[in-house]
Length: 296
Image 1 (cartoon, helix red, strand yellow):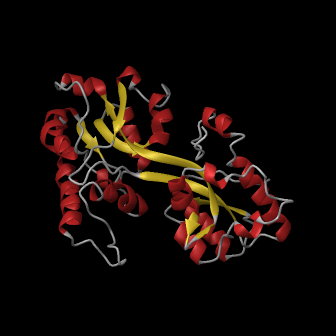
Image 2 (image 1 turned 135 degrees about the vertical axis):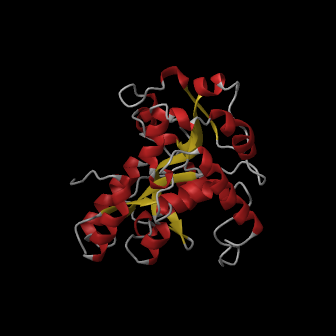
């Protein structure tokens, strides 16, 4: 098998270029926010092309063994399943418990209102180049999917309404976006250029007290080679808004590329089943992955 390791931020671009040029990609890594694009363009193959062939389908495949939300959100489009959940993440509040304790807090904020009204003013010290919060805000997918939605959903808003028309001007969506702007005064200068790595590093280097980020970054924040937090690191659910606690959900599926030859497609399908199987779920989790299997 040939593979190339690339930063997440470049993955979609490289895959799309490969698809459009009919390149050598035989299997696709599909972020849940790419599934519509990949399926609509015919770049990936529905799994029902393979599941009826007993010679290449694991009798223990057990599609019902995936968390239904993950199979639906990460691998399905238009009523068809294209990929199997490979790695998935929940949004969490990571915070510096020592900073919070020094500011008089013995627990993290439970709501976004507490963040901005109670916690942020006491945790913000621009004179010391220490700030209350960092919200990854780099223009593009990071801004729309991470920065905006982390506050739009808890405030009851959404990008689209139920008829798939823009919902950006709804009172709830506007309230969430206004909250994000108001919280900016408690963030580091230049936070609009922060991607995930910059936000995580700001917490790791004791420059900010709190971030909302993917669970996958726990390893980075606990590694003494990349983080100064030590025992000060603490984790909690993302804060709740007026509409409740509606944290971010992220992750990937693995799908067979339509441009691959028939033998390559069959081989990719066999690999995908193994990589997402119940049989290796425990080993995958122990190696640092996040399985989509309910059994683990």
